[in-house]
Image (cartoon, rainbow, N blue to C red; front, side, top):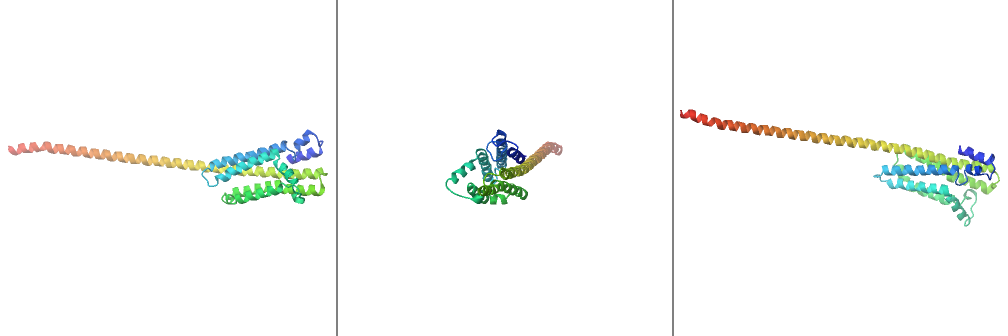
Length: 258
């Protein structure tokens, strides 16, 4: 949908019109940017929720860090911080080809660092969740870095004259990023639902154990009370027998004296 709107903005509208800027996926603070920011913030919220559900897990810091990373990515998407970094690096380094946009170099190093840090974290995830995470991450990185390199190569070699190709490249890039985020949100929601289900089952199990303990305590208390009652009856029976024995002794003595 956004890819189609991007093409419409490039070919059906004047290049300097406000609607063309709002539909252009390569412009800042428009419909596409707002949608991407919302997706990134949604990911951050879901990650924060999962970190609370896994508060006793050894990887809780990884979940929290991922949440902060996505908040930072949302800020970058809205403020185009990577574009400013690109302008800063472009004044100091002369790169060309696939590295025409300089920011892809620190961006690739950042992705590689996060991948190495989270390798063990990914191995410990359930297989289905890990596969969804890797698939969505691969989609997002292929759009954010891969298509950015392709666009840089094209601009470096052919310039900015062909609006159709540039619109297509930018549209594919943004679509891959958004589709990757949607898949990641889907994976997070399924994993969060699984955690809620496990927490509910654990709560039921604990409730059953608590009821079993209460029932055991009740049975023990009942048995103890019955034992005390039987002991009391036995004691009263002995006292009664003793009194009967004592009362029968004078009678026997009188009979013998007669």
